[in-house]
Length: 233
Image 1 (tube, rainbow, N blue to C red):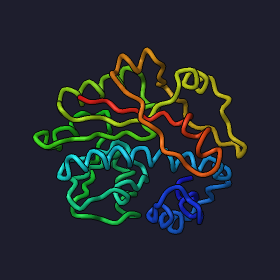
Image 2 (cartoon, helix red, strand yellow; image 1 turned 135 degrees about the vertical axis):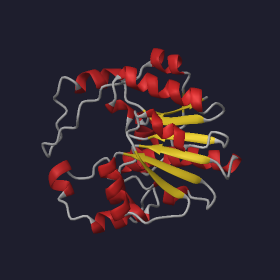
Image 3 (cartoon, one colour; image 1 turned 60 degrees about the vertical axis):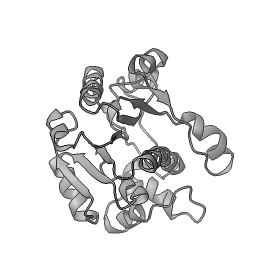
Image 4 (cartoon, rainbow, N blue to C red; image 1 turned 30 degrees about the horizontal axis):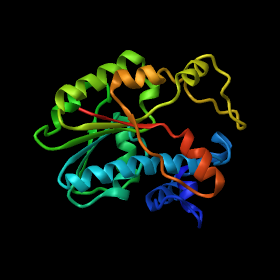
């Protein structure tokens, strides 16, 4: 979705690495997932994360960004200031794919671990300023797993922060009943954790201002649907 959006001449995101990935991977994306109708939404979500990472790096240019469960996200190449220490925490099979498909960089390191395996925190220099990101990840964890992960980050990275996206609790509950199959027949895995006002307050999270995109949809509708939040530890 993001790569297809980046290909457009009027794209809302500059993401040459995502475009290169689409050209390298031989896979029937549209047949499997349907046409990229929500490409702009995906790109605006990525931009919301980029904006927060850039704010962090403006204040802490030598800081550490820990990206949990990136998959084939290419945010590092969009925001790299040449000084950030970027740690990508990924399962071994996805880490191997990132090494195969994405370029290496001296300030980019892969940690082959589950985001829920707290031993990855031992690899982070907590004396440096730390920002943890979790894009398209936490909704696939159980509520107690999400709470445990956030509590562990809070304990280990005091003074740092977490940026993550979430879905409404009602949508999480609906997904667990099935019936969210798209036009292509693809049905995403169930979303196990959702957020509402009570949960947001419990976590001490604030909703970030969403970037605006293209046309009425990108300037009015999509910013309302983006739910990217930040927590300060």
